[in-house]
Image 1 (cartoon, helix red, strand yellow):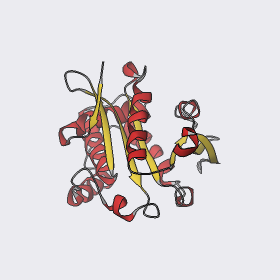
Image 2 (image 1 turned 90 degrees about the vertical axis):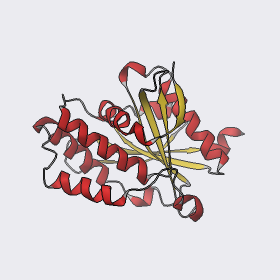
Image 3 (image 1 turned 90 degrees about the horizontal axis):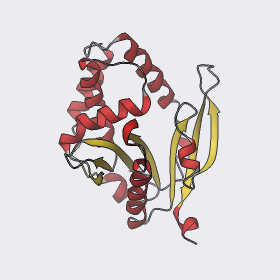
Length: 212
């Protein structure tokens, strides 16, 4: 069993592990894990809120993040449930670009491909939505019901804050069918710039329509 609760600073390592298991397939070492911890922390702190799924032993087995659009609410978009450590963000990215993490070759390659795909995000796709679902990740061994529980908690927060339109970006390498089964509708798709034939997909969920 697991519990959904707000993110805490001590959850960073666990979120990094979930991020790895949700998006990467290569073996990783201690250096890779240190980077994933730092990258996961930056990801969480750049969002307005994050919830984690934890076991009775407080092991993080999944997390979900949300980011409000300024067009929806400048007040909500400027509010963050966590402390933002801007200096730590700069140090992390400098260390990454200067190869200071000494990442394994396999993970470096997969992460650079992942990061390039993330950079293909088109801001126009999110300009008119109230809330962006930035990350949903969970461990393979705990997938049964975990993703659904995280999304349900996310939508509870969205409704409480008055958000209607929720959008997210995924791709054909990920479990995009998960969103379709939970009422998200595809609003755009485009091929990866690398010519691989894979696609980036944007989905939308309109909470008020689902409540009718």
